[in-house]
Amino acid sequence: MIIDVIMPKMGESITEGTILEWRKKIGEFIELDEILLEIGTDKVDSEIPSSAAGVLVEILAEPNDVKDVGVVIAKIDTDGSGSSVEIASKEETPIPRPEPEIVKAVEPKPIISVPTTSTVEKKFYTPVVMKIVAEKGLPLGELEMISGSGRSGRVTKKDVLAYIENRGIASAVAQPVAMPAVAHQTPSSTPVPVSSALAGRTVEMHHMRKLIAEHMRESINTSAHVYVMTEVDMTPIVDMVKSKGESFLVKEGFKLTYTPFTVDAVVKALQDFPEMNSSIFGTSVTYHKNINVGLAVAIENGLMVPAMFNCEEKNFLGLCRAVNDVAKRTRSKQISADELSGSTFTITNFGVFGVTVGTPIINQPNVGILGVGAIKKQPVVVESPQGDAIAIRSMMMLSLGFDHRLIDGAGGAKFLERVRHYLETMNLETVL
Image 1: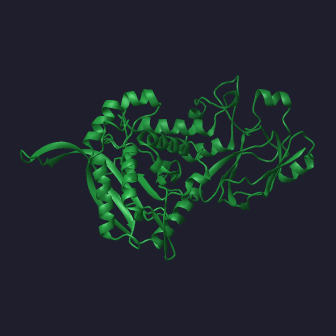
Image 2: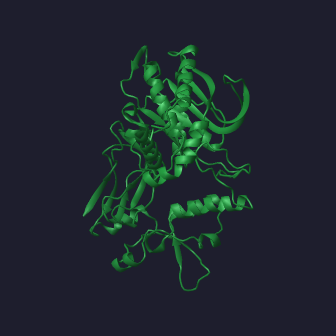
């Protein structure tokens, strides 16, 4: 029986998708729910599982083709009734359908063989894995050492990427580098290379980077960007995270970070300054009833901004759970396209990389974006009734980018000062 594979609907506002990569070739067998292809939209890139088990007999869309939702993009033969002539017409060399017993023993997906040092066993690797190996310059000898997490010990894309990441960190420094226990903390003084780019090569820009480039250029052309900055004394919050971080982890199952404190202060400030929680459409301004905070999350090929909806209804613990949830699902590619739109204000945290201050670009159609810097200990003049003194405090820089078409400098400065006020005066005894 021939089953049609159609372009799936990735979200309510998504009407089309771009074919990024087919994980199977014509003639190859695919299991139910095994990844068949990767599709990109203007919101998110997604891996699409197969809706049936069988042999892929026809591919109707090539990489970079844009297809409407509901259009047939491939066909799968579920019982072998498809003609072998049709398969052969798509490939120079016909690939026979694997026998059932072979399917059970070894997944027929791999088509590239690599000689191994063992005379007993011959390992196979998928085209995706071999492509990564070639791009990263990984010796085949090391590839054979990687333990596979796939069926029958097959080495997957994630296995290779995880190995390369760990390998790069291990070879970059002679001794282990102490990583920050919580977000915003100053990183080790020894830089660790994390870029996958190779000098001397010209490659096609990734689909996500193309979308980011388009959206950022559109924002620059749309909004009149202005920035104001201020320092925040985060010492009480830092002390609280240190004292309650372990018990919080045991109770909730994830770490207590500084991001929910910032989100909480932003939500309160947005309630005081509703013009910052608005959007401009032509010459009309929409003041949003709900506060949907977009949280910028760095991923492998770029940046995504999932929205946390109705933040004004959440208490501090609810915000902690929301921040952890959207960040975790975004990094694991489980976030939906609908969650990547609808934000009314955005927070981007470059402080996790040790950066002190930045000037982020507004996430359209928002009129404001808050940049959060790293928390660093500094000597600060502390005023008191007994006189001035110099003390070591944990300080953080905040930068606010806003649309000057709607918000003037005074309005932006007042909003940022209100965020600072809420952070420095938060009642930490009652938040948890």
